[in-house]
Structure formats: structure tokens, C-alpha cells
Image 1: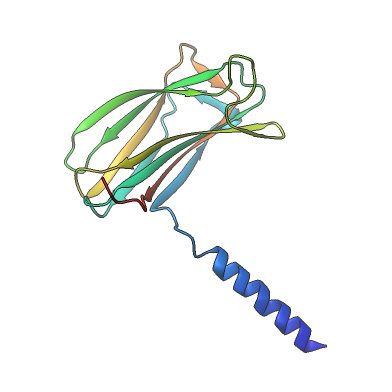
Image 2 (image 1 turned 90 degrees about the vertical axis):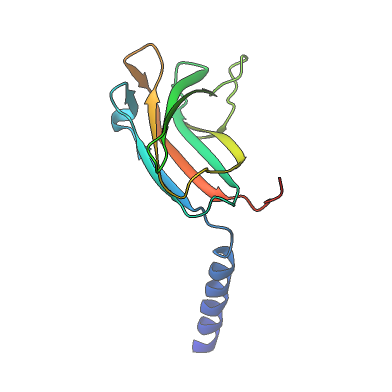
Length: 160
């Protein structure tokens, strides 16, 4: 009776090990908004250590809203700061819904997950980068925004 239990345990452990062998992100973090409200003074910060300037990286921004989000898009600004202190600011518009009202991202229950990818990018310097997200709509509060995530992973396609 013990032998089938041991075999089952080994099979489950092997499956878990194989599933974990995929490429793990260099960095991935999420910031949750209290009461699903992204206020203009709330600026999520993500700090990423880039170890190599010769590699290409894929960057993913993931935004989760509820199905009660009232607009078809969300504007925000991405502030970046390099290890040597250079700064930049880039406006980004994330499309949440199509003109017909259907969701751009994946809907699961009352949550819509929308992603924006910036693929095959190089960082100019090694070290710590700071990325700050600033809500950019005209209202003080973007309601029904659950969280925002920032992920950096090495691009397996290293060719230019």
C-alpha cells in the first residue's frame, strides 16, 4: 500500500520540477491599488537590476481592471531613471476595450487582464533602473483599476 503512494509522490514531484524549468523572469512585481482606485498621487515604483548590456530583454506591463472600468483605454506615463541618473518620461496608452465594447485583454469573471509588450530591447547601462508609473487621465482617480505589474525577462532571440 505504501509503494503506490511513494510512486504517486515521485510522479507529482517530477511534474512540478519539469514545470518549473521554464525561463523565469529577471524581474516581476505587481502593485495593487487600494479600493481599485489609481489616484493621481499614487505612483507605483519598480526597481530592476540589469546585469548585462549585451542581452536583449522583453518587458511586459500588465494592467488588471474590473469589468466595471468605464473607459476603452487608460493613459499613463512611464518615468525611467538609469543607473547613472538619466531620466525619461514616455506617455503610454493601454487599450482596454475595442470600439464595439469587447475586451482587448483576457476576461475571467469580473477581471480583465490587458498586457503591453516591449520586446527585444537593450538597456544601455548595467545596474539599477527605476521605473515609475503615473496615472495620466484627466480625472483625479482611475476607478476599477486593480493592479499594475512590470516584468523583465531575457529575450531568447538574441539576434538583431
